[in-house]
Length: 333
Ligand SMILES: Nc1ncnc2c1ncn2[C@@H]1O[C@H](COP(=O)(O)OP(=O)(O)OP(=O)(O)O)[C@@H](O)[C@H]1O
Image (cartoon, rainbow, N blue to C red; front, side, top):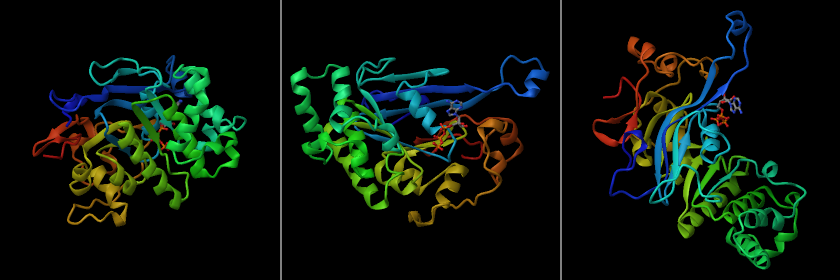
């Protein structure tokens, strides 16, 4: 259960990750207009803008939203690949830390082929974090690699193979084994199945689910596929141009979407099986972070937008009738 600002209320399961008004901006190169106005830098691109949420231990929080809305930037900031521009991320169970304990936060990527070094055998790929973090004595590393291969549904004989000798699904299993080698508590899965054949996607999703239960892992799960998100997530955050516009428990989000953008996203998937939920047809151009609109960033596409939506940015607030749902929209309530 999450309140505004991403704080987990006392008495609830401890958060493994707690994100509070986190922003990550990128400096854009100067345009000729900037030069003309004698500006030293171009305007910042607000890839992630004041995002807040917390993920309780053992749960899955999913991020959805159109391409370019900042999901990967948020994921990369959480695993420490990018430094936050503002706001905080705290990690841990009891007593949160500003930095993740080494190894405890890991990431798996969409394309396992490009994230695995083609010159390394599976054994070396998986052993690397074990050695770097000194998680096992040198003579126990090989046995740990065999254990991890078995855990992800491969066999110890696979240890000698190179990435190109595996299928796409098997390569993703190697990536997962490598991530688990660091003994993480928190795993960021950035589109982990979108590069895979449909028949293999379900196997990888089931593997992730099994591992979550067996190892007590906490997931941030990023996907374009709303049917997948509905299946795997406990809670969902809907991102639009760098901000979370709606955050709700999965069932509530799919059955009772509140933000016009969430409704539009769900309406774009005909077979989600929603009955009676209000439908929103897509309107207007897909906006870009490069020229983000004023006020509510969604207003140019929103059929109900008012003058206020055009000028005043809505803050994320708990819904009046569902305090676990947080929505940033002037028209809700
Ligand atoms: N290293 C970077 N430097 C400058 N701009 C960046 C950088 N990384 C991402 N961006 C910009 O930040 C915005 C958000 O990108 P991001 O990859 O986070 O979106 P996304 O929602 O993950 O998209 P997709 O689903 O296509 O992966 C984009 O406009 C992108 O061009």
